[in-house]
Image (tube, rainbow, N blue to C red; front, side, top):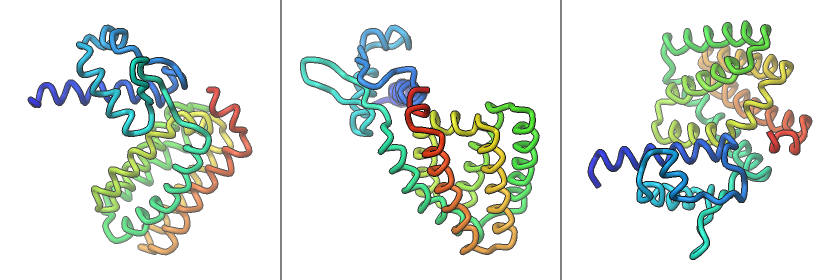
Length: 220
């Protein structure tokens, strides 16, 4: 496959995946190659390739002689992702203690300051973006491209839930305070403490989702 074709297929794949994860395509909705191709301005071939790849990720099911349908993300999927993330985010924070740079620590502290500001103003979109950035910095600071890749995918998979929960000011404030404690552990190069706090951060998110109500989360 040429580089241009690979780039096209990759773009189509990521666009369809984004539309599934954001809720633009609903669970059980049929994904028609022709319609999607026309929407994206591409032929049916890269759409077909993208749907096959999405089937491997479990986001789409392809029924022979019928079509491709959205599987989406279920309550169990979300809970499983956060359970797995709780372990891996803890490992990430522990490793970051040995690898994080002063510039990265400065970025994290600035991130917390900005999150406090936007949370106080009720700017939920900025809070979500800053949350994304916080975790991206932490993933980079781990020094492991394999761990970074896995965590980025998991973080992206639960974007709809994160947008809903972080729109609740109380959770946004508490989440940022949890970030602050993780950064303090990183500054002290206390790997065990950083791991414990990052794990707890994920578990607090699960508890918050239980409190908010799964029906509310999944219908957004």
